[in-house]
Image 1 (cartoon, rainbow, N blue to C red):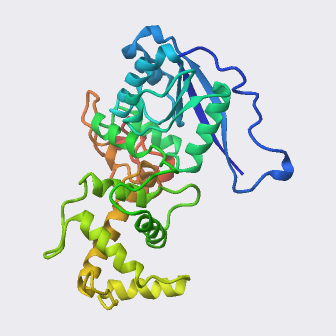
Image 2 (image 1 turned 180 degrees about the vertical axis):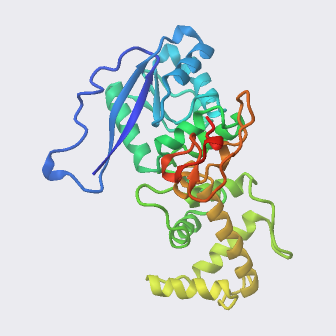
Image 3 (image 1 turned 90 degrees about the vertical axis):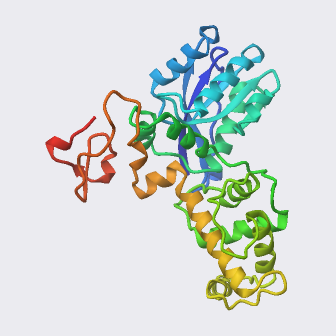
Length: 343
């Protein structure tokens, strides 16, 4: 069993029973791998302050855990504006994980951002706990030392916005937009084989890839003679489905044959075309995994924090292997020489 701290930013006063609702069943029912949402840190803000002051107050709170925004019927418009600003990279703000609306429907403006959002039916505390559990279960969390870097002035607003959106948990009920249900299911199975992720909740790479190709947001590269991304993925997955096997060893053999251009691809694609598509698919899946801020933390890459909005240019002064600068997480090595100690 693992706990996942959350912050709760309420625009409608205190949330009764947030801290005393039982988080888990009795000891006999606990699962060692169970994801438990909480403990919760509550922050209460006055919606009458307006969006500018509220966003500044959230930044000043220095929230480094995922956080949930809570609003009532009268605060829906201001909540929509805060969500937009948080996902647009507002300085000092990162980690918006979801929205709870108490006593009213979730505004369309929030749903358009694809932020996990629910309506409180049995009380705000129950809704918060349920949403937090869903968020914790369906995506990796960004470690706090890395969240601190993302919120800092070292990270450019546009980069913070990109990372904020990528950090949102995947929808467990996601319906494919470019692929069929069967194609998406196979792509999920394939992604688990090709891109093993760190322990804990995983990124739904297949859903993100489906969304990416539907929106035409791939890298734009395709081999000569291949069709558009949507058509290539549909054809490639159909061809792969015809030869896909059960069992790790059998799947390994299929993967090797496809990579080598020796698979029996059938009438949809030639073996060579299937191999070319498979190369693109592997590249897309790895790029999607590495683009998540939790993955950047996992591999120890802090290069995203070299733009910045501070008064001084943000770059590196310490470049030696095994050494880090003061602003970097301790896990990256020992503190570098004095002249490289930047803030």
